[in-house]
Image (cartoon, rainbow, N blue to C red):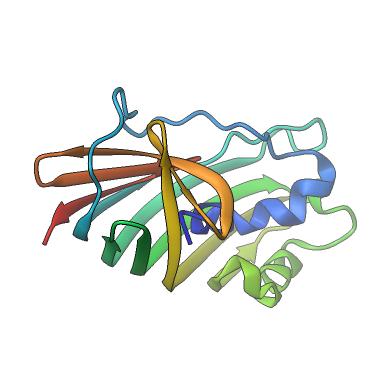
Amino acid sequence: MSLRFSARLIPAIALVLLASGCLDEEPPLACPQLSTTGGNPVGKWEILDVCMEAPLLKGESCADLREVIQGVAGTGSVEYGSETIRFDMTIAVMRQVTFSRSCLGTLPCDRAAEILLRDPAQAVTGAVCRGTDHCVCGVRQKVRMNHTDTYVIRGHEILESQDPTPYKFLVVGNELRIQQNTTQIRFTRL
């Protein structure tokens, strides 16, 4: 499964607001960038930490849309064989999203939480939205990744057969970092 979870962990509230043109497609990444990439990822690796950035949100009708990631945690491991990869990880994220109620059209703020909780693809385990003219949403997401795939290394990126989006990787000593979109995970060799 490469890091497809990062697409699922992009703020679920943004899906509600996407029709308003509030989500920028290429958010900046303030997590430490991988200045060099490559190495040999073969082996079993345990998560040390996860860094995730909030996407850049924009739009005329949602100009005041803001997101703060309040916490990210990861547990589990990944194992790279010579041609296969096995993920057994859980990533949890706490977010606070604020925006004008006008971003929802005619819906009241509390309905945004209902919409988020109904979408199983977003892995939202809890959401509360309050406000009258200005909405404040607390959103909890949890994604479990437990699967096996095949992969190839192309240059300094890993490409898995079930996911067309490659991700960067770096192995230095007993540390592996993988980065896709706005998420970077740091592992230690087991």
